[in-house]
Image: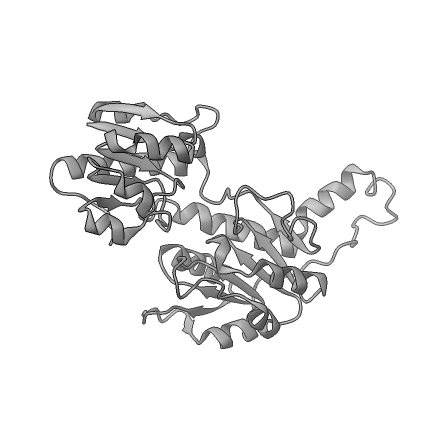
Length: 315
């Protein structure tokens, strides 16, 4: 097989995980982050492509004369034109629930930072404020308990369920909105409007598709409680960023964001200098253990395809 790994720089930037294992399956071309022109010029020679964010739309797939397999180094596969892939009989496999624990953990890292102000107090101590304190404790930044707070989870797949598990361990009330019917007696399933208006924390864990595109807009922000914490570790285009900026500027809500509509962040991104927001550069999925699991699943997927029994096939 001739295999292209199209954007390995998104998986390892310092060699902490190795992709050499794919050499066991054929001749591998490793591209740091393949340019569009190079992809279109060379795609016709590959039998399999492994990628994370590389755009494989109809234009690219129409040129892929030999391509029979696409392995996605991710759970989401909105960078693949699935209709074109199906027409060309190309099998597409994703990595399923590889990042469940990591993304749920990052979600609560935001929540705990917001309610405990750990970084703010750490900076205060390092600036010498504790040595100048008149009492044993400094109460400069307001903190709060999670017990009794209501968290609203939008999307109840593997990550959403893991977030619920953690929330329940903190004695929180859990509201869930999911497009399809789910069953979990530990949580309360509600409409999106009810979730938005009733939650102290709103966290997105749903896929990006035609129905969810721009689902969190001005109307949604207007329905949120004043002072609510809004979290997005899912996909940037779920949110209208101009409307989020206005809600932050008006001190209506706080936010924690791991994903944007365009990544990496543009210099003119409207959220870049917004108040009341915590940023991470799309790292929720990225602990070394998590990325190694991702590669292991991708190896298993490719092996299964070669053996005629593919796993984690998406459609």
